[in-house]
Image 1 (cartoon, helix red, strand yellow):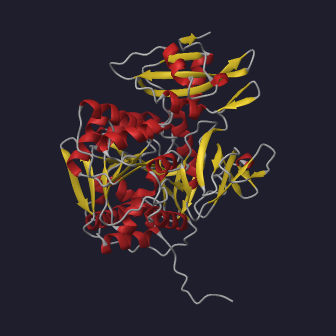
Image 2 (cartoon, rainbow, N blue to C red):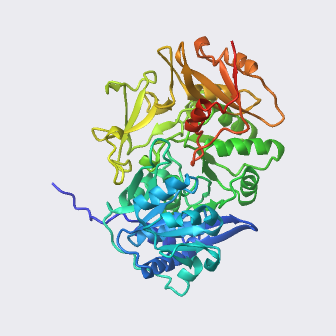
Length: 541
């Protein structure tokens, strides 16, 4: 028996139509050199239509790829709306990737157009001769005559591309399973891999993000979207905002603690989202330059595990609740959401906030051991996390990676436990867990304990070779400004927190822990630096 329901596609075009007509007064505010500038959803819709016409004039049709090389700002939001809604595919280039990786993914995706912020041209223009499929560079905020580009690439000004075009566009009816956007992984192991999102997956993901047990967005919210729009589609915030009429605050290139604090104090966001390192840096800044954070209803942290000390300090000093979420480029990214059950004691609620959150309705999860046996959700047994769902990728674009999939499940590479209530607690990445004398040591657990010390700003733990135990932990520490601490003091601090055999003998002190293109600790580079003898290591007896 079939249903009697109409079969209308869930498309980005429909999302654009809805957001700009039902919520025309919702706003996008971009932080600039002279403070904030604001446009309404109605104005965005008209400019997105003009951009679509402009791209059509450049020959963009069907599923050709239009790349962006941009900060979070209103022009980037216009591309988010216009490109997939017109039937093309939005490809967000990660501005923090190595040059050879940017060349690889632009070629691999066969990008035809790149829309780029003028401030990022020094990074992009040296690579243009290597991008053989690109035909047009559209520059936001600069005179194109000053841009040097190879003969095969035409350079245009963004505003001139839009000027004079109609402010309406007949967004086509598209197959909801067709490609809408694509992101590439950060390439920490091998070449970056492409993940292609469908109109359907983005629509469903947006609905989940708006739900009460997820990010809980509504038309009354103003969301400070710090997470980059080139990082897993800014965690779905742009499209979720269109769906419910939530206003967005875009920080553009101003991602340092001082301007972020000024944005919060001036624009009064009700929610915000960023990786833990952003909040760690903001916390250090606030100690010397406090501002009013009371407008923040909720802060979502993801990308890597959030130290419990960070959650506690924001709550106790500023009354800000931080919720963790887990996801990947491959999962669009929302897989879990860290909103604890109601009616819990403060201690139990805080304990659940220290997890990566609870799985959302559409994402199925399981843990498997090294032999592929499924493990119970008992909060004790540790295994590799595998997931599946309507916004979880089932393959990579033009890359065969059978080791990443297991009978229809995505192998995440994350290791941890799941409680009977569905809360995920990650202990490590499979490549980062430390095997010492046949026993496992969680680098994440050690990092969290070290960062509980009041003198520590950052701590990253890697496994290094050891002749006796196979591997032992090496702790890289960044000390807070004005503080002092020794390796001996930190090791003594850990004695009541971890088993004696887990206590690290090797320590190194850095000005900053190296970061990946998405703000995670770059443990691959740390391991390489150690192997090359570039780290000054203190060894304790």
